[in-house]
Image (tube, helix red, strand yellow):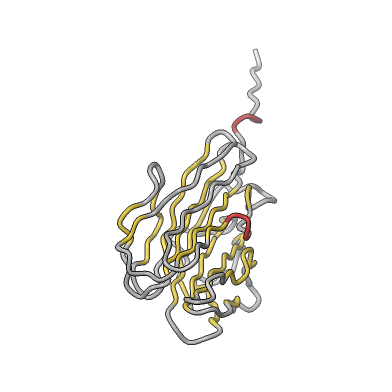
Length: 207
């Protein structure tokens, strides 16, 4: 599996990849000497109608390739969304990391929302994502006030939305709608930590 680097990606930017595979399987970084970190490792909760989700991150350095590669443990449907963020905190990529605590994985064909999380710093970027175990299932609605970065409606459906949370606090659960042909759903929430927190800025006047 592979995906191209988003246009404009350069040294110092952070790339987040959401990778979605059919069946309960493994998703492995295949980028050699320029690996991504797998922050959410092979989440595969729906044993009856399996699909697997992983989230990867990397702070881009000079010489990194423009194509990112991964290996799926079984042959089947897949999708990848790559999103680039600039002005990310110098040492911490995440304000809230993507973990199993921030997932909604209802049994069977029940819809999944991106669960509520509580951001810790001002201007964190909430990433609300949804994944559908289906080859054809079109997304028809996204959370209000969120920007749709990308939506994949075939192969192995997923959608990725973002919103700047100006003041640290609860994001609330965020819902998605679709045409309802999927057999299982996963919702994921996490947040990117901004480089500059507005409340810590200082201005000095000389006169």
